[in-house]
Length: 139
Image (cartoon, rainbow, N blue to C red; front, side, top):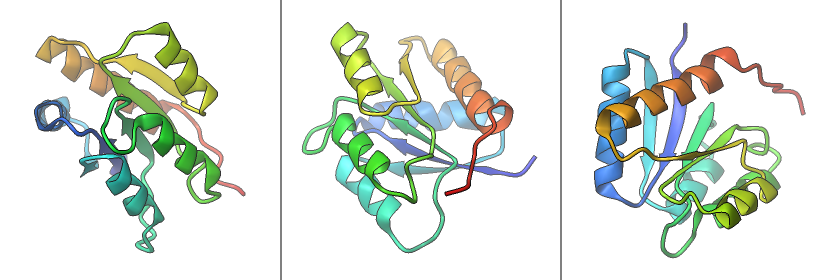
């Protein structure tokens, strides 16, 4: 299986480190790019590099530009609107879940606090969205 590109958007360095550790331990071959906030994520997605991710893991609660604003930018752009976006956040509040889907999230996952569970959750999310799920790339 070819390597998949994953954009991880999270402003918490500890959560980023946990996620990168989980990816390293998963045995899956992924090219993970980290954006430390919403503005950085949008800039990466709008760059002319031509390297769009196959999956975006997006935190909800971030300063300056939160996950919903990033999601709006992703869904408003023709080049990125079909990329699966999984909200990966600590909030399990119903209003956050509903708002995320209303803004175009593909899925909503609450981050487990246990490292082993977190690693397993990431492995499951990425296996589904990068291997099992079929995506239409046509415009």
